[in-house]
Length: 448
Ligand SMILES: *Cc1c(COP(=O)(O)O)cnc(C)c1O
Image (cartoon, rainbow, N blue to C red):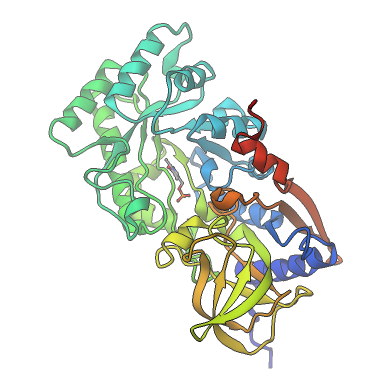
């Protein structure tokens, strides 16, 4: 009889295998030194390739799609450069992200500017460089009018759109939902008079050729996302009924949910496409170019943080492991642990998965407030001083969105790859922030 198929073929299982190899090798190569480097972050470079491939193949090849990675999810320049090498574009929402994307080598035609509060300088640079721009509100539209009035180039060839708020409702995390009735983003489509005002705006401006929508991020179900995309497509078709061919593209935003309690990719990019195909078939009829702006779903699984347990103690009967990873790694988890759970994995001091007896424990970080915990009352192999705690699924919005509380330095970020013989090769993606740099960013270089 044939043995049952083993799960080692799944993307999640392969990721686990690579992670375990990386943890072991990081210890052996001194990257998790108890004294010099008690916390470090790691990026799975092969995983980035797999995620980019899964995204690109989920969309029908006959469509013209630009997958613009939302830079805020992981703005490390070498990571952005990897994503570019895998055929992605980049969505930027601030002058800093714009500069990071340019440093990563993206060309203007691969970039989309979505800053919710664009300065005059940001807008004129973007328009001058022919970067796609999504306008957030009527006042910004007037500002673009004035800039375009002075432009010499043909602006109808540029990718300029308006971000609509389809007001389809909130997902399970209000702060991550961008299509509520009173949400701050975009122009509220269903507010009295706005649809007519928008139709007039497109009629008067032949250079408005795109429509943008982003329903939200974590916690937004696929059908809610699709309802928002449907509203954008419906609006674009209404414009085109009056002036055929004016709207050439739909930017559908991002927001694919990641399940942080598990390591299986669900929903997948293919799940998202199939719901969109069912709910918004017009998006796929070839009459529109498409931009997507996925962030979290592309990168969360491809990073982890590892930290040494410095001490353990018992308090009120609770066992607590004190580590160097806390709110500075994931402020969201520390402040809203129920909305932003993270898995925590126990490894021995040498980097092999722990086989200690499970026990209910808290895992605390280095910040001076009581909520600085990445896990509370979690059943985990009993942790001891010198052991390692690994926090998976932190490749998006975690180690690249630092919280400067207590002046903790940003940890180093190492990319890793496995050779055929199993050897792990690390490359520095971001050097550890030094204490001198912490002082410098605290006004330490200002003359006194
Ligand atoms: C944050 C954001 C995204 C990406 O959201 P994810 O949940 O990371 O996929 C895309 N578009 C816009 C406009 C955003 O603000």
